[in-house]
Image 1 (cartoon, rainbow, N blue to C red):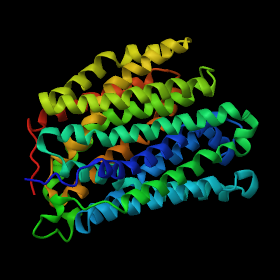
Image 2: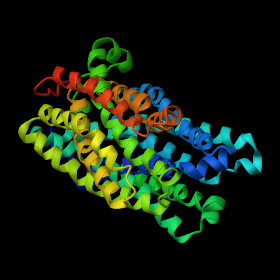
Image 3: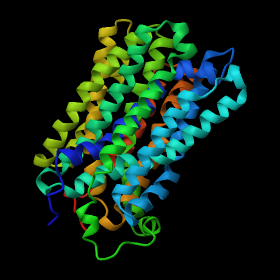
Amino acid sequence: MVRRSNLNRQSVVAASSGNVLEWYDFTVYGFLAPILGTIFFPSDDPIASLLASFAVLATGYAARPIGSVIFGHIGDRFGRKPAIIWSVVIMGAGSIAIGLLPTHAEVGVLASILLIAIRIIQGIAVAGEYTTSGILLVEEAPPSSRFLVGSLIPFAMMWGCVLGSGVPAGVSSVLSSEQMSAWGWRIPFFIGGGVAIVSLILRLALSESPALTALESRDAAPIRTAVKDHWRQILQMVGLLIPTAIIYFIIFVYAASYLTTQMHFSTAEALDISTINLILIAFLFLAFGYLADRIGYRGLFLYGSVGTLLFAWPMWYLMHQGNLGVVFLGQLGFAFLNAIGWGLSVTTLSGLVPTKVRCSAVALGYNICMAAFGGTTPFIATYLVARTSDDFAPVYYLMAATAISIAVILSLPKQLEFRN
């Protein structure tokens, strides 16, 4: 049986802290996309600038499968601890670097190139963060509470999102629009660097996963073994999380810019309702993790997917009304359904594959999904609306993806096995 001695408050905080940084950084970028688009990709067409800014977000996610290979190998071959230490160091350095970047007006196209390069490096670095830190905790957790322990990682992730929306909201409420465009946008990225330093200090004191240290030998090429022997499980991971990725990026990243640029709510108003919903969804993660330990995970996944098919259109309709309170309710409905996938993701993915290739396989499945269906969502949604003139085009995209996910859920084992 896996020992429990290392699972304490300190290890939980240390393992989950990097997820605060990861999602703080990417949420800040998503919420500041309209400003960053005009600063680094100036154009007479504001939609073109926004698309370019979202394309950089997607590029960072596109680099994640590469990072999966690198950090998955480190996590399985050398240890979970060194993987998450290097991940947070590179992420934090990238955040500070963005805060120091010259603008397009100062150095021309070089500014755009540097921003893209930093996002790619960060995308590689974060590829093993969410999955490896989650695996480290789940491997230490007692079988009766694996889902609850696993839900602590997205719980921390969501507080990163809260900070990622709350900090720009706070800065924009103090500064004028001109000050935000001139220099205020840099402040949130510098704060991200501070979060990285705190996380690094905490992680240096972490113990290695007992499940990994208990192995008689470690796979010399875990990525190769994962792809060769567990490709079906990797595909299941991708299909399972498609609607989870799309919903989050539609309602918290794409919608934030849409509400300001198309529906003419203020940036502060859009950030305020998103921040409230992010706080609520964080606690829903824990609730669904607790439920999964007691009633099973497959039923909850089905509930979320079927609910998305039935209620996605009505909730999207609410989000397109002129009343901010009604928009909030539509976003809240999406957040409730989205909480199931995130809350159960870490433990579910970890239980589909054995210990010796767990970091590699889970990193591949999770990051391929995020690259193909997460980071691309704001770009695709913006493009679909612009091409079709149909504000509901993104929700049809979501519903099609959800139908695929239901088929995957039905193929999952009723009970997960955590084997070596």
